[in-house]
Every structure is written in C-alpha cells, then in structure tokens.
Image: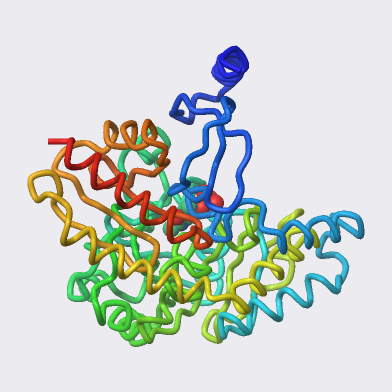
Length: 391
Ligand SMILES: *Cc1c(COP(=O)(O)O)cnc(C)c1O
C-alpha cells in the first residue's frame, strides 16, 4: 500500500501540467461524506469535491440515473432533440424560475456563456465584477476573477472589465455607465474567503442594473444546489438575476454547467454559441436525479439548520487569539485565521478531516449535505482542537 501511494504520487508528478499543488493523500473511494485513502484510512470530507459533491459520494439515485442513461444514450449533440434533455431543461428552468437555459460542461464555461449573452443582449462591452470575486480560469472568466496570482501570467485579459469593492452599492453605482453590459457577483464569495453578501446588497445591485440597462449575472456555481440552505442562495435575498450561472453540484458530481437566461437576457442569436458535450443525455439524467433528490429530501433544510448551529457553535467556541472571524451561510463555512491556513489543513488531515482553504488565511468547510450529524460535529470538534493548539 505504501508503495502504491508512492507510485501514484511519482506518476502524477511525472506527468502533471504543473497547474496543481497537491497534498500527499491518495483518495481511492468515497461514500456519503467519507473519503478513503490508499492505505484504507477513512476521512470526514469537508472538501466536498470543492463544491461538486453536495449530494455526497456514491449517492444511489445519481448512480442509478447514470447507469440507466449510459446504457441508453450518452452522446447527443444539440443538432437533435432528446427527451432526457428536454425534461431536464424544463425541470431546471422551473426550479430557478427562469425561462431559458444553455447547457455546458463547467463553471468557467457557464461564465463565458453569461458574458456572451450579456454582450449580445445589450450591445454593450463592459462587465463589472467584484474585488475578491472568483469566476473561473478561462480567459473571459479570468478577466472577471480578481485574484492577481491567477491573472498575472496570462495578461492581457479582457480590457472591458472593472472591479469594484464587494458589498458597496455606492461604489458600484459610480462604476456604472452606458457601456456596462452586466454586473457579475457571487451571493457568497467562495474562493475569495467565504464572504456573504450583506443584507440588501444583492437587491441594491439588481436595482442599479435595471436602472442602468445592465444585466445582473449571479454566479451560483459554488452556492447553488442547497449549499447555503436554499436551492439557490439568491432566493434568500429576494433578488431576481437576469443570468444565473451554475455548475459544480448541478449533476450530482458529473461535470456540467448551465447558463439560465431571464427575460431581459433574451436568447442567443442562432448559431452564435454552442458546445459539443453541452446538454449530453448522461449529464442531463444525472442533473435530473440531483434536482429530484434535493426536491424530495430534507437536505436543503438540514444545510440551513445545521449550518446555523455550527456557525453559532464556532463563534462561541473558537479562541480569539487564533481566529479573526467566523462566517458563512448554510454548510458553506469560513473561519478567518490570524495565521496561515496551510498548517491547520495539514493538522486536520492528520486527525482525519479533509478541508479547504479560501485564500491564505481562511479555512473553508464544504461538507457534502448528506453528512451525518455525528461526522459533522466530529469535524467541528476537530477544527476546535486544532485551532486551540494552533497558537
Ligand atoms: C468553481 C467556481 C467557478 C469555476 O468553475 P469551474 O467548473 O472550475 O470552471 C466559477 N465561479 C465560482 C463561484 C466557483 O466557485
């Protein structure tokens, strides 16, 4: 087993593009909110596939849907109609209360589609995004992403992108003019440090957009599908996006992305956008099953209730000398540390809990929503132990 671990690490290191910084853990299988490494050690998963595993690992309804559809038809470009896609698009549009959808394969691709839709609908070039926002790593999406480390090697990016401070409607108002096609924001900034939109902010952004003839693009790639205690986080804010970007947990762990288009976003002119794998029946079948699980289980409410309890508990219990702030919504939880998060992540893994960073100093927890109460509170207790030692 030890040799298998070394072989895998050496092999991956030999062939990696270099893009990823990896931990010395080899994950071989998962079930629910548990992950197992090559040595047979079990971990509580608070990485949640970086947000793609809201339904956990090996969910029986997702497995059944994938197996059934794989045997029936996997590939069907949108040259043709397909009944699984038709049913899925109708279900997703109904769930989001938006009339139209373009299906793609990832989050960044959903952002690309949103930017193109906004430009086509308004005839304007400029996109306004938020500081600390993260929207993906393809060139268009990267232009809206704020983090300098991700951007610098690839500049110049789209010149028509402006960044304004998050949670500051006045600064946004100053940045709007007749060239602005759209404003793009996350309801809770994920990679930027788990920063929720302040009460009223998203509604103010929506109002400013409407008055300026610009579209509101919400990036719910990480916050969608129950993560924050709502099917979509913006439902808590009483705001209606013109364009809604989804991916990550959209299809129970299978790759897929979606751009939902509201009335003001209209439609793409014919043949101006497309994707070979977009809307493939396999992903659509998994997406349909994922929507059904969320609609017929108590997972979303559990995320809301358990998340609030965990936040209360952490706020009361974590030592101030190690922790600056505890924040989040539902089971999207950020703990801003006074020091670096790296050693804390390593100490957590040592004690059987896998978690994420969000920047250099924020510990991020994204457990699958199916996590048992025992595992959730065990993970919380481990975080408390590690942070008590961390000073
Ligand atoms: C992960 C993420 C993306 C990019 O998604 P990919 O599938 O990795 O391209 C975009 N926006 C947000 C908010 C994300 O969390």
